[in-house]
Length: 120
Image (cartoon, rainbow, N blue to C red; front, side, top):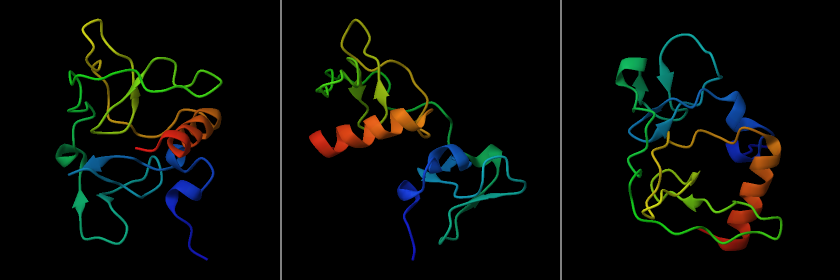
């Protein structure tokens, strides 16, 4: 049975997550050699990788609706990388790195619950 990457426990923390043209490397974290997207011919090295900074920084945004536990805590959803990002005083998204996975399993669970409740 084939499972999606999102269905694997802690998948985002075990993958390389380097990006090129928005595609994420599907090799294991810390691998040697070229990055690649499984199932495609896209190969790249670190010099060809997308920069870590998200192009959505500075875009106007509003705080996302909250779950009963308060998640996402006043942050907005970035329309470019889908990260929950703090807002600046002028109502724009703070500079941030492109979303590369949740830092903890708990955050991943809250993120999943939020997207199931509010969509995207």
